[in-house]
Figure (cartoon, one colour):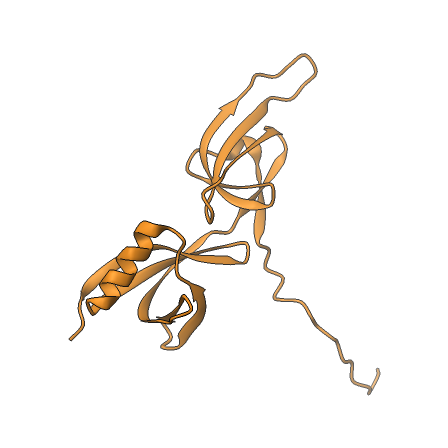
Amino acid sequence: MSDEEHHFESKADAGASKTYPQQAGAIRKNGYIVIKARPCKVVEVSTSKTGKHGHAKCHFVGIDIFNGKKLEDIVPSSHNCDVPHVTRTDYQLIDISEDGFVSLLTDSGGTKDDLRLPTDDNLLTQIKEGFAEGKDLVVTVMTAMGEEQICALKDIGPKN
């Protein structure tokens, strides 16, 4: 055997994929799908019958979960589509900085300071007003394909 040490230069993450494959025919309304490299929530699915030469086709209409744009795709139902890993995490709001970033408290007790305020005006005013009134706010952060965004807000009572 060899006595010399091996050094590996690793520039990769743990190898966890941002998406996973799923057969197009198995994707349902309110599920998630990747259309044009964007994570989307499926709002409409229609399946055409098999034609003279073969495949039934699935027509997906999806809304981008981060920017709200409507996207469409047509895929043979026997083929695989990419489905994004979508996670939702709750964090307690600590602070809002002047430059539009929020400071959040994680479950482990650390802080998360790399998130911007949401672009949705309704949610934005709710967060700013609630924070100005001194309420304890919990925000829900949706994560998919390396993107994160605040998507919901809960009020857990006034600060003591």
